[in-house]
Length: 541
Image (tube, rainbow, N blue to C red; front, side):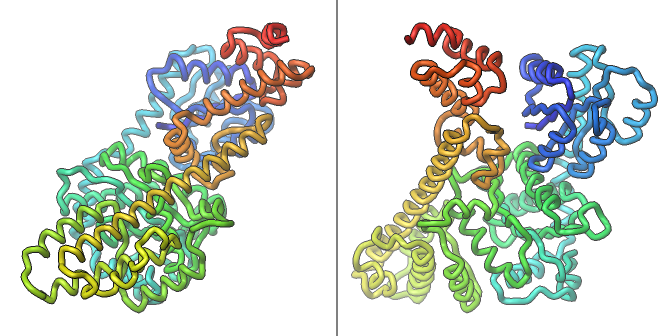
């Protein structure tokens, strides 16, 4: 869903446009409204805006000046100017600056809706599935992917340093002297009809879609295995993002939401992203990769279409089962020695069963059975060491895990390995749910304690270090209701209690529960309780 921002210094116009777009428009938009350019710039610094509906004449910074600021922050944002003046010079300037449309307030609601529809159509036409697939085929044929994949694998496991000559040789378009942002992308679910070749092609299509949204950035991606793609992102010198500024990092994180939506629309794929919240020195890439992989592995809630940064780990700073930096370093050293990595993924049980079925066709003490058992046993031992809950396993689990001879038959060994896998996946699911519950409890506590303040989705997302869209989705998954519904319910409950049990004036109660006036509070209360605040207080006394 596209996000639209209305900027007009007349509150009545902002409210009217929000109502118009919410009730009469033939399209769905996530609509926000502010009353000054300063408020707009603050919001633009926290979230991506796709369409901006601007009053062209405002006190302080006018619409044309604000347009320049918007395009600087979000280059793909479409602008629609709204004015009460038929001023030809303003109209000329607007179109020279790249505006999508210019509408006079007197033209009426239909003209406004038509201009916004035009902006939506322009955004939608910017790409098509055929374009992504054609580009993906060309890139797949022309790339140096095997060598690039090997080098990136060495980088993220600490097996090789970042060298400019090697990057240039592999056409990686990276600057070894500049710390990148690190991103891991995962397709959460493929269609049953997708072959392995289809999956590879779709990952390249995902890579190309993402590349279209990194304006003035260097981005290099490589698919390491069928379940993850690693991307390094740096700003381009002599561009608007010349330095590694917080604004550039917000831009990159904001684009992930757009890329996720594009993959859903054009490739029909649910995709999750986890990114570093800050740039990472090349020497520390292997540590950050291990941390991001763990975040992606455990996830939150249903663990699909996630938008996460490593900032989410701050929620678990104390008393948490999350892996400490010391453990991450130890795991990284182990990976350097083994030069390989295996991770528990969603299909692990099914894959194990297929492998077990093949192994049953072998006879006697075939050497492959020992290779298979010891390989899986090492993978499980590594996974168990990533989490402290060893009480979930039988008391003799270690003795049996490290020796095939500890089992009386191959079938018993297979049953044992499968049971360990199942227990690990159960723990992963429990940890994921526990993490989601902690986040929601923290958010509810914040809302309860700040009911009289700004509780916009952007502010709430900042308190738990999540993307606003993903927080909204996660809250609905975990509680069964939207955040706005929860806040409204809480405000209603508190206002009823204050009307019943306090002598506060209705104006004061309105402020305490987050309304800027007794009038707006009265409308809300009447709608929810079918009685005015005064009538309710009288009936309760």
